[in-house]
Figure 1 (cartoon, rainbow, N blue to C red):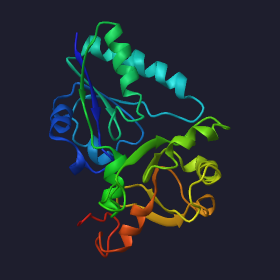
Figure 2: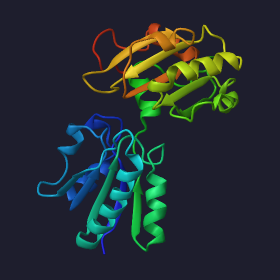
Figure 3: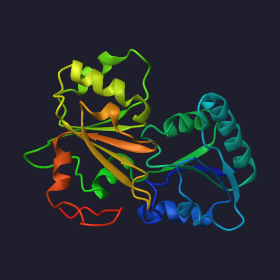
Length: 247
């Protein structure tokens, strides 16, 4: 009867892993990893460990989730150290809590190792702090993939200084339209950060009114708020895709 470790892989770069996560990868007997876990992080897994790519595919999420749960039990029966590796932090829109509850209900020992969330790290490394004295006193992290017609759900976020939206690229037109309709200023600055923390990072700056028309692709973090303007005021390195916050 092994222990299942639900582990955050951070936003991409291996040097953003926690020490605890790195130690577990080095000791793992089996690893079940998601699509957004970078190859750089996977290179830290113990040689010879059993590896399972369980990344979701559009339209098959529930089918694959059921397979993941079965695999976790199977691996825990056969191994001492099982790592369920999720991008970012497993408790932030990663279904980590659901898997945790499911395993505990069936009598398995589960330990959680938090990860650095892309919601904060990706903007910071692109030169955008999610809070800044006198500019933004708070922020909200929101899942962007919502049911069509759920515009009113955005009303709670209109007055929040900084909005950080994960998994929202495909819904950006509806998100912007809803926020503007509910009272958010259409000139509010927006940054879309593609492939954050990696060599392929690209930052597109726009406004809420123009967000629907920008050419961007997932995975990306969307930041809405006045803190985006700080990126142009010296809080980043002059060059390089993986820009470091120097505030």
